[in-house]
Length: 133
Image (cartoon, rainbow, N blue to C red):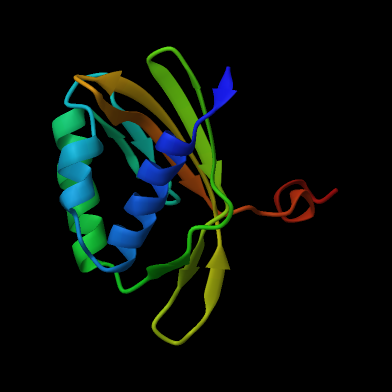
């Protein structure tokens, strides 16, 4: 495996477009295959299938009042036609509250384009809050 500036730039472009409520990245870089999966922060955000993921993602970006204010440090790696990336983005709410998040994505190269096949974003919760330890 090797670091990939190309895939990193694809991911950075996504965060920039999402911050501006631009959804064009989604159509270009989301795979249409049925095995595509996105897991969000809400317990009900488990979206399967490329078309459903694309539609849901567009709606979320256009309707949300939270904006990505920082993509964080994006790291991306590839091995053949598979790539994966991670970052620690920050959402900013309308009142200025910042919410640090964790994001990972898996990509597949299809017809010369990196297409997301799996994405996961979460907000870390301390173990003490979950397990009392």
